[in-house]
Length: 195
Image (cartoon, one colour):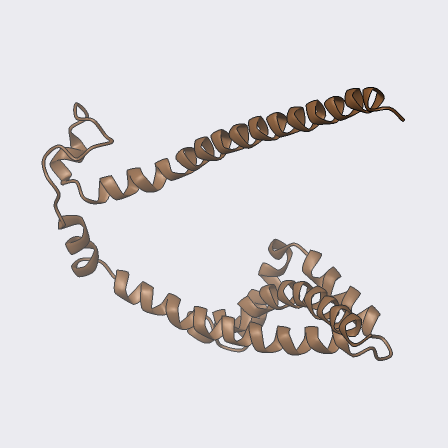
């Protein structure tokens, strides 16, 4: 084949490559523009919340000022009121206690169950994994009344342990199902490495 016949093909290939890189560049620029727009859109409420927290009551009551800036100076009165005149610290402590207990129970039960269902193939493991998935699909609102009756029968109403008992019933199926996929995937990748 002559060089004259190859030249148009090479030029066409270069034009195609340059056209693709130009399209990729515009796609990248467009995606960054949309990402910045979404970031600004979703950061507006936290920004407004922070600005409002540092304003005085008088400035908040005056509607004539700009709501996006602090005109009268920064004040920490709202935080002082929150920490001294409300039960915020008690609520925060309760949240920490329940969260630590629920996360610990959920992780221990979910990791052990997912490992055994994802890695160890035993009779009924597929049916059990499907049952866990179907349990996860049950809407939480259907469980409120039965769970309330159970907690009431156990005498755990208005206690930490009532919430520590109820929350894992909602979190364990989800975490187990997610980790079954991880366990079985890591099993496949380790088997490929050994082959």
